[in-house]
Length: 86
Image (tube, helix red, strand yellow):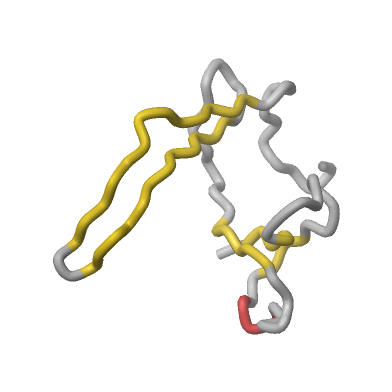
């Protein structure tokens, strides 16, 4: 597994790195780690992400409210599968 590690807010792509060992990530830093997806879903050859907003008010019993609106973000350049050159 490969993980993408980045700051949890406001860095706009700076400071992103890859790791295979989550133990190497400092627990003192405020970071987000995501598992790298080797074959991402694409829309017309563009990567995208969906942001859905939910509020969890209770776990037992489980009570979740989902906001009616969400966000779709599309990349501006076509996805290029990773190779040793890129």
